[in-house]
Length: 458
Image 1 (cartoon, rainbow, N blue to C red):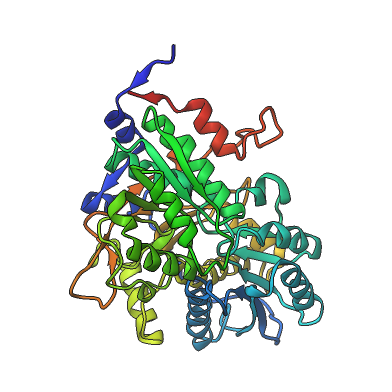
Image 2 (image 1 turned 135 degrees about the vertical axis):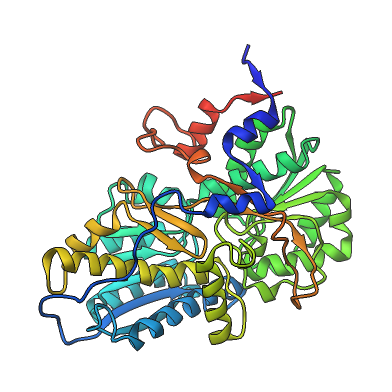
């Protein structure tokens, strides 16, 4: 018989913190790194540095994706104001609308590289797109840093040995696990679980990873309802009424962007949030102003385990305070995790170029830049980001929080005093853990790791 452990003790072992104490989790765990460069050396091309940036610019996903372009533009403007990369090459950005669909996005990536001669590709929101774009970027030898498109499948199957491709958002499996840990800590008596998730890879992944973790943390938990709306759904009535009819203790959702805004507003009319507790992986991932004051308070409203602009509060993490101020001044709105990711992608690349220049002189080739990105610790608004060398995946401490109305903002925010922080290393599979097809057929390495190594709490 499997030996059970105390839930509170196990959550403490995971390093879960709440509120002000959680701010320590984003403080440096490595010595502070100088992110400024000495004078560049050598000769440089006299051409601009061309970036292709793809994100959702139209449709319901734009409230999640458009801030990505705004973060990119802000960083490019700041860098160009100082002469460009290495003070010599200004950034020129070619944008693309991800709403065109996966096939069109693949064609656009090829066009950008072969016709526009881009030097670097960034962006991408949907986890349905990165597995298609990653292999093409590798084939073209195109330096790529995905801001999102967080599916584990990218590294598990599509690009198992990346050279040119990187990604900085927390890996998708962490999203479902973060939500499960937060829900189990907050509502450990909730055993009847209803789900509403988008019917594609992100939703399926969120469902799988929430349940594998939650069942470890809450014995006897069971699924009582599943709803799988298509992306772009405008009428969630059938999913809401089905969910309510199942009489759940807890409703879990990974519906995102404008789809989530439509769903929560419809759910208010049906009284869904009074029927059960509610937890989302990415509800507050949208541009903050997209969430109204009418949003239910006290629910777990995730941010893709990445970043929220009110946390840490005040000047606890100056990098965030400065970023929020600059972003608001430029765009008259507050940033989301896509803004943070796109902005700091450019600065991370800039630092890698500067370090490579000091090593080799002149404009460094991709090999030299890649060598500096691998293993990099980089200070972002969300804390320190670490690029693991083996899979080119970015890792930072995972966060989620609770919705709250406050007087300071004309929209609802996440309560900075109740943010939940989890060290990312404690909820994702370690390096060299077997991938699907290597001794197991579970959805991801992290799913198998949790199933195999996490104890059953009692």
